[in-house]
Image (cartoon, rainbow over all chains, first blue to last red):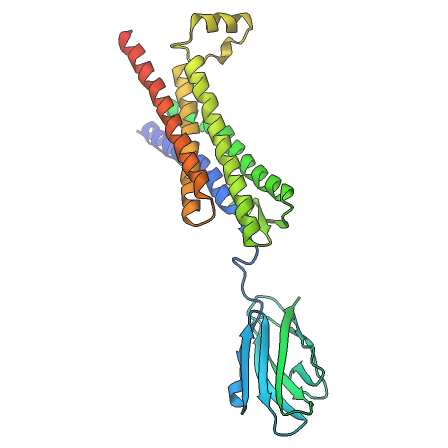
Length: 148
Length: 178
């Protein structure tokens, strides 16, 4: 009886081993190659707050963002117009790429410390503010956000 | 303890499984090398142990994956073809006296295979051939492998199976006559 039971167990194990052996190359073939980014998450999320400001709009074209606004006075600051969120599982460095010198975008809300580069911990957020010092009232600010 | 056939199948499956894995790896790396694709080898792929190749973009991945799938299938087809050739020319039940004499003079008589040995090898290679074909079908449905490769694979697998079935039929007729 014990001998028969052992035979059944050994044969079942052998069948399991054989099936694993046959399936291994196909499983390997399926998982060996991958495309970068397919399973990765977005490096940042932007939450627009521009609707809280009069005459301000926010738009996006691929990785380039545009803010249009109409100022009331020549030099005007808009605090927390956009919120940047780091949805990844690690701390990341974010840099604002903005070529305009008259419309400065910076992280945080401190006009005396206009950061264009910042480390944001995982699952945390930080605001982006705008300081516009151009002569004309109607402005358009185009920028990108880079991550390291 | 373990059935003789089962032990034989396990014994015969190890080398083809390793060969197919090597063919897939080689196909991918060689195509990436010749097309000058950017890729990165990272660990934690299959079985969370083996390496995996991460391509920078989708078009590169699709081309390399197609070539590697083709390499894997051609390897399975080549293995099956060798077994079928042995079944046709070097099967102990119907090997010609001339062939047997020639092999004996070259001291290569061990190339002649018994039905037990031959059918176990053929079963394993045909299983791998059809599994590779199934993998190609799934890959084509998901939009990665070109349909042309899968159609060729289906034709090859069906024909090889038919040739093998003819050998089995011949063997059955020989057994009946005896």
